[in-house]
Amino acid sequence: MTELLRTLFVSTPGTSLHLEGDTIRIHHPERPGRHIQPLIRIDQLVVWRGVDVSDELMLRCLADDRGITWLSRNGRFLGRAGGAQLGNPLLRLEQVRAYDDAARRLTIAKSVVAGKLQNYRQLLLRIARDADGARQSDIRAIAERHAEALIAVASCGSLTELLGIEGNAARAYFEGIPLLAKGVPPGRSRRPPENPFNCVLSFCYTMLKVSVIGALEHRGLDPYIGYLHGVRPGKPSLALDLMEELRPLLVDRLVLTLFNRRRITAAHTRSDPAGGVALTDEGRAVVLTEWSQARERAWRHSGLNRDVPAALLPIVQTRLFARHLRGDEPAYTPWIAS
Image (cartoon, rainbow, N blue to C red; front, side, top):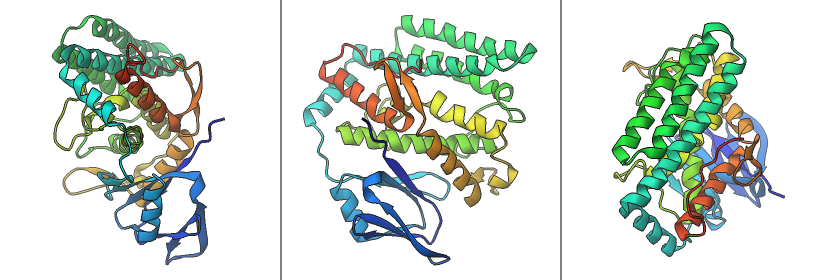
């Protein structure tokens, strides 16, 4: 039996977290009462700037290999503490060898992009089933472009060509966003997001990135040495690689649902003078509640032939990736929902 542990999100400024026996005591001066969470049920903490974590709690989390991640008020990743590095150095050496081998790097990158395209295609076809008329035809046309891109990925011979295929498919998807969520403008904007939809999308991508980085570090892999996204200072490229296959169904599907069901309204976001859009405290609480519930949903894993909770998919895929690097599997198999 797999026990699904939870991530404790704390975003309210002025909150402090303390160790009390084997529990976390959550204190805020404007919220009377005793609020505790058993440590045994929590696998990691995600806290926003303005939240204090006591030294005793931080040391206990580090001793238990329970990660703590800090984010800015706008959801930007600030840092992470995860205890002592216990990973296998031989695995990291093999990770670097695979990066230096152009053929291996391209093969891994192609697997990552194929997983992403297949899951986006599934998302589009599922939405098209509930549409009709020209909207249904237009959505299916985008899904067909992803099917054509999948064929092109199989035969492409360079990383540059692969990035071009992936970029064109992503552009077609984001230009078709108004077909998937009524009233949402087309296109992808980030740093800063220019509308509420892209704001929530970026926020949830950050939540996913936190999970993937934690899974990679726990397995002993370097999150900063990737294959599709290359190597750049400060860029967690391997985390971004492994996120690709997870984004369509774990993030995009959730965000589309939030907007189609009007769970996110104009009151949940605010604009800043520079033209960016950010979540309000209330909006952040709504998204985190929905995100936490979505992490408990079980998805069929075609490679393992069993259901896996969304929260565990980053850990499962990281293990499969490590098995490939060690030579236990001839290729990395991305998660494709069945």
